[in-house]
Image 1 (tube, helix red, strand yellow):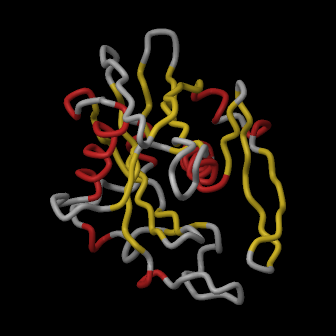
Image 2 (cartoon, one colour):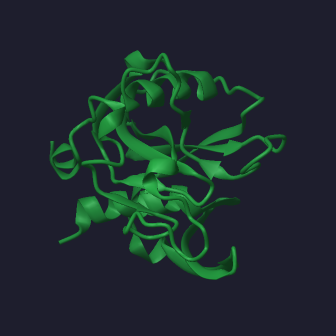
Length: 207
């Protein structure tokens, strides 16, 4: 109940994404096209991801995926299960649940969506709606090898420790950019995924 109270209500339509909900991303919160050519919100493609909190007896874990090395974009990067909106998806929740089952084999009856984080706008042209869901144990992971190299779990306590939120700088499209990174057990969690994790931390522990 505490976590649910810290999140945005679940969106009931795709039109809510990027309109009424708070937003953050690779180019800040202003939603404007900046000097590097970042797309304005209206130009972005809609996508949705699940932030899966696996409620085990010992503690809560976050399920993440490592993308296939053969994908044309973001190959090998750590991400949440999810993807672009499909015409069959009535809401962003539908997109997140469908993509989660397709990518890692977790059926929707194992997942209880409880709320949303801020939308995240990427420099690669997507407006991502992160849906937080509690995942009941008992599922079997079955990854789609065309999209997912590996699925793995990280303790929520690790990700919610600000000491593990590294800040890095890099030049991209002619401008200096800052991003978060959270190395864990041989996996490099960074970029949009790390940004959404920091948003979850701020929601839970921010003042």
